[in-house]
Image (cartoon, rainbow, N blue to C red; front, side, top):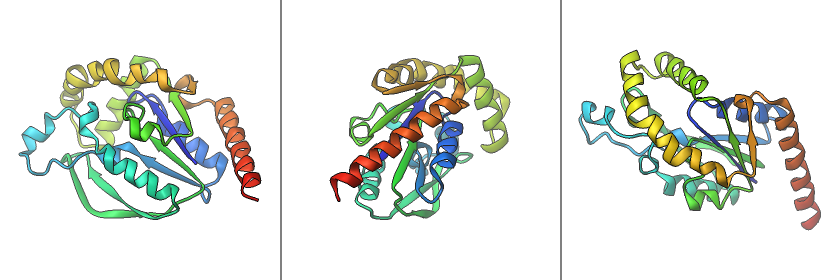
Length: 208
């Protein structure tokens, strides 16, 4: 089954997803990030690539993501793209991803795409305060993505914040569950884990 974990940048989506992987078991759970599916822009000069709006749904190759989720659901392996965030381009080689019983797909925009949304058996929105989200994004981009303080702040004001209001916050209406506290919520992890176990038991009994 495929579960979706949405929410704003820095909200704690990855933290919550990793907690679910620990609870469900790594051998049974695949974590797939929307960030790996940004469209390639290597045909553009670096300066122009840096100005692209990566918080708009059009920046993500949702068709490929949906195709991969459908293939994994059919128990078929896929070649997941690799993305270089410092250069804003896809990189080689692609990563071979094998199907597992539970697939977690996480990203800020996954509930905006209807084809992807319809594949999700459970939609979880991880919520967090705006200032906390910005601080987490700032630390991540400085540490992991080769950005400068000025570039992070400029991008946040120009695209991240307005796109969050237009596309991310509005997608909360599609969620089945809203998780507060920025992803660090053991009770929510326990409830989702129990839900998965129930669904697997139902599926097993129906196919016995």
